[in-house]
Amino acid sequence: KELPIYAKGKNSREWIHVEDHCEALFKLYLKGKSGENYNVGTGINLRNIDLVKRILIICKKMKILIIVGLKTISIKDLGSSKDILTRSKLLTDNGCNVKYLKVPNRNDVKLLSMLEEEQLSKYDAILFEHTRFPKSLRYLKNYFPKLKRLVRTHNAEFLHGIDKIKALINTYGFKTIRRPIYLLKLLYRAIKSLYLDIKCASLSNAILSCNEIESSSYWSFFKDKKSIYNVN
Image (cartoon, rainbow, N blue to C red; front, side, top):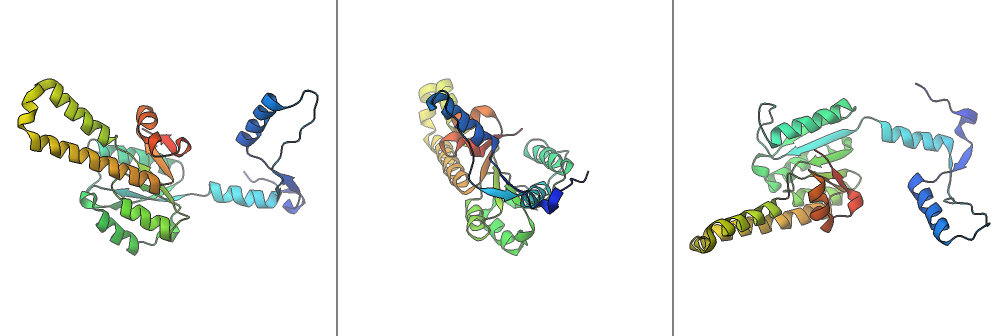
């Protein structure tokens, strides 16, 4: 439906976000004086027509580029591939235009060269399906700062790696010492995953975590909680 704009939208109002308003009310409840009058506002006026234009920009169909560290994407596949298709369907069902950029072996250098050839200015956001592309994220942050950089996590692999080492030690005890190279490889992979997670989290606008537990016990150490979202 069309929204009518009266007086050509020239009427001006002072607008405030509902969360900011609630925060101000709570502070007044704690520190305000009984019987006193308080006006809560931003001090910034905005014409109705300007507000409508901003709303239209937000509500337009977003164009999203999805970075996938897989050679093929099929609904017949299990795990990551199937999850990616399910999430992209949610995006398309909500009016978003989605395009895949497939990066074999999750090669960050290869992705960087692919991004340099892509017309990135036509996208609103880029969704990285793995925390394996810090160089590409830094490139986007430096040269396309307006692009939203979203990173979707496929489990906290650092935690899984440490748990695997613990499980081996608990199961086999001192026998695991006979396989020091294998244990060192597991530790190296876990630390590498931790490094990539920290780098990608710092270079992204938001982290899309696969569950609430990892959001609070892992990702919140590297990213502001307001920038972490739980998605299935």
